Length: 487
Image 1: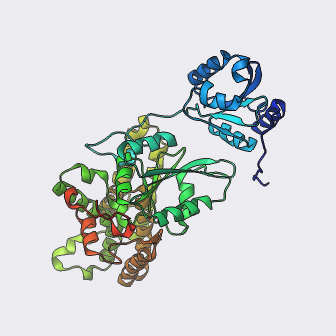
Image 2: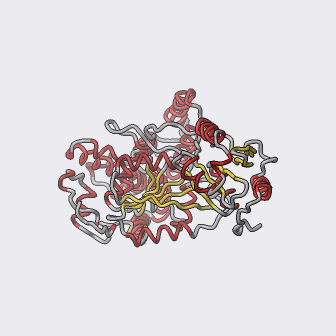
Image 3: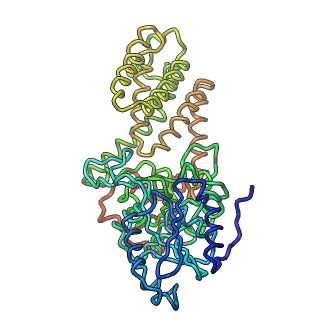
């Protein structure tokens, strides 16, 4: 079924307009779609709105104001008088397309249809049920702002503008989805961002051809990034307005999707997913230390299990003073099977924690600790060394700032473990080399994914490895091709 609709011009006949709108909006089929027939200043009018989206106090005020008008006041130039004089409201517009009216009403604004006028007045007096801005669970900081994005796009753009009071800040509005008409905003600094990237991103968004965006920003990511078999994310998500503002000043482009508390940052490299706001909320030396610890944790989460398995199966690779790293009693279950079992167990535990009510979370943790830490060892299913190194890898995964990168690293860790078990030293070397080659061939909107490591840039790589003081960061990242490279 095609969902494309042609333009339907507004008639001067109120009955003809209301009949069309009533049918298309399903007024008699949906209890929350309201058609209110009124008469003001001797003219018949109709209001179309969605219950739950309307600010009742604003609409009541406007209706009261209109009820005090006389027929003489609307005798001539009715539309202009209503728009400029008799409807005292900021967000007001008009249209001559009834299909546009349908889409607008379903998005929240109210439509006012007036007899004898071939235009429909649109009053954006809407409100959405929304939670208040609060600190995101995924990006907590010890010291810093506690507000975060919510599910309403207008709130999110306002939170961003509060931190970026730049005259060149642009918020370009799009609608995506043949049926859903989801609101999407492309945000960037016009004087800084690479405008060719902005245009490419907008074309990619406008080319999305689907019924709707039920999963919001994740659906958009899959359409604009491709690489469906590659688990590594090419965009970064943030729920913090200060993080989004910092990236805007660097020259990135942000995408907001209505109904989602996460903003999409483009373009990004592998190293962007390893940065966290906590590093910039402390002194430079402390931030550099936190970044170093985080890097160590991430590398441990990827390589420690396959490397330990390789050394445990090939103890001759260990020097005498490191023989303790191996395993004395491998148990009755093969080491590879133990690793796969506990990897799956950790994922099952993670999913169970998500679906478990908070009041039962402590009980779930106790059960998991008993099952994995004590009973599994006593019955011989797992060994102590396997649990130890898996725990280190799990902690490194949870220390990864980007949830998407942590999951991608977990999948690669399992693949590297299987390669190592299959081919030994050769498998480990081939697995690591193939991983680097795969990442080096990736691009995020024509930006090399491993930049500045591949291709190498000393100054940029130094900024990646060490959190430098803000007064010394006087240049924007060159890979973004900013129009104004100096901060």
